[in-house]
Image (cartoon, rainbow, N blue to C red; front, side, top):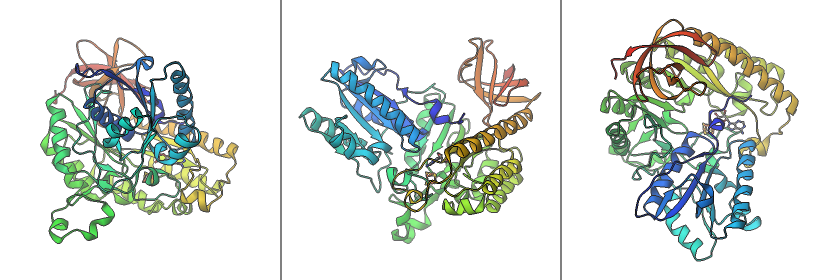
Length: 481
Ligand code: 5AD
Ligand code: SF4
């Protein structure tokens, strides 16, 4: 039903990584967005310096960490079920400790530790460097908690361990937090104010990944286009910076260019973009460098101006369409995907029709679609009634999911009977004899393996398709190989 990348990967467990001097076992499970998966790799790195190796066998773990998501109620319910399972295991193994990380830690700290007493440790997204101290507290028999949000923590100095990786693509986190305050969204409360990471540490990480033979990176942030480095600190404190700092500041377009130039063979992606912050400069940089993928994830959330306003989205439908026109003018083959919410408070049938008409106007390559889920503490929760009936939400969601499927098929067919360059990243789920990979336009392509291997760039002739996948046969290694 809901096409949700995050939930497809729910509960992914970090693979085993052995440092021989380490004797303790950590089991870490991640839920939610790519940022959480990336954070878990930072946590594993911090704890690998403190005696922990990761394990995929939960029963042998001394420490279980669950990196949680609060974005919708459903995500929180999934985590609650996992915590029940951990507690059952703890009853058999009293030495086992359980900790909650991430967005729910921030939101439900007191409930977990004090009222329900179901966890030993609660650590918010900006406090992972405090984990060794907090674990020492737990060893002393005390509950440990740190959910402080930071002005400058970006973990730029922690080198993530790529435990979850296929060895081909990796995330590089470039900003943390969000200042946008969309009225439905809990992220600004759980992850705090927006801050950007030192570009030097970003380029160092990129170069290191290239050295390790990675082929594709995704620059990651809640709002990447708002990236701004002026020497550290919150984006909203820019006014306090010196004139020299302001003059030498680096925005997202510049950072993107620096990455493209530093590693011209590395495929570069970014996520997520916010329409009001995406500049023409970014689009121009994309068009200038071949290694930046011609694909943009551009959430809009609704096609109705009155809903966009109530969501505090800071752009109109017309401005969004103008942005897409600019993108297509500068990069005619650029593919675009979306996030959409149905059933926001007071959404009428007419508003819903506006969403449908926007989708028809853009014909997105794909999208992630959700029913509105009221989140405690958000402006929408405080000021607006969650008044769209559940059955209506379901029906509207189904309508846009069905429409998107039609659009995906139309867009996918545009790549049919063509030579497309594919970066192989895994085996096809449907057949052991086929590789799966993606084009720069973020289209999944499957084809017979022959002698190719994961990490190869291959030119594939596409012959058939479903709405989500192109099927073809490899012709040759591409020039990028
Ligand atoms: N209810 C439903 N969907 C939400 N999203 C964020 N907050 C909510 C909410 N309260 C969706 C938005 C966002 C994506 C990451 O999750 O579409 O872009
Ligand atoms: Fe949430 Fe809006 Fe920020 Fe995205 S841009 S994280 S939806 S507040």
